[in-house]
Image (cartoon, rainbow, N blue to C red; front, side, top):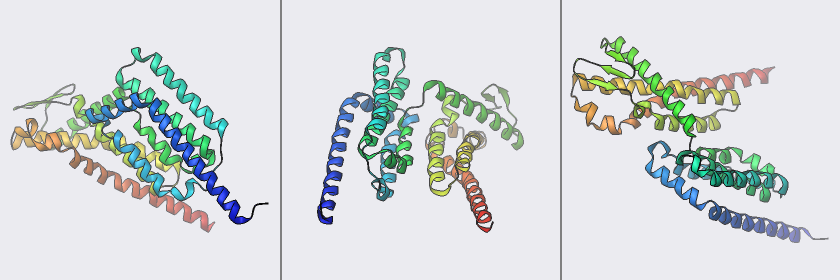
Length: 303
């Protein structure tokens, strides 16, 4: 029989071997998926809608660091479950390569990125077990935000935001007494005309707001339905934020200087100000959800 010291050394050796093998697996994963991952980060650098992608692995890594004490609490090789994940990832990868001609770059990278994530999930499960994966499911599943949104979904979200922003802007204009002539997404004023184009949908800040709500829900809420409510509230808040931005810039252009609409920092770089406004709108919602959760827990404890 091994004494306790020998047993501890043996366990340490296993953990070290496990880590080394997983490190080698990571290198293999990067080699296999190098081209699509390179293209993904290039997309993130050049496409504003996906500028968040480069931050996702860093944020996920930070979450892993915060919860590092539980990641190795139960480690166990799990070849069958892990291999299933890896097989799905490789199958998706091969499908993407074979059918690459029929997809645009966005959808091709959606498939390949999802394939790489599933393959990596599988490798982690192989070396550390399904329980370790469950312990770290939030930071791992957070990596899904690296996947570019498929075009057919992205287009529908943009149209929803565009229509909602145009409709609410029109109502706010009427409330303020500046009633424009409306032609679809175009508003005609005596001195100028504006169009609520796709670029005005605020898709970039809406994605950032959605990701922020997911993070806030993870840290401040416990029940899944409240987390879901917080995420769903993002869509009307995004529409409200866009409408306020459209109305503000238009009113400044009409009553102060027309350059606010054509060549101002508020128009070109002012998104962060209205994003902060959206956060202020979301904050009371989070507070109410958190308060209701605490009240429910208190009632249960008393009963």
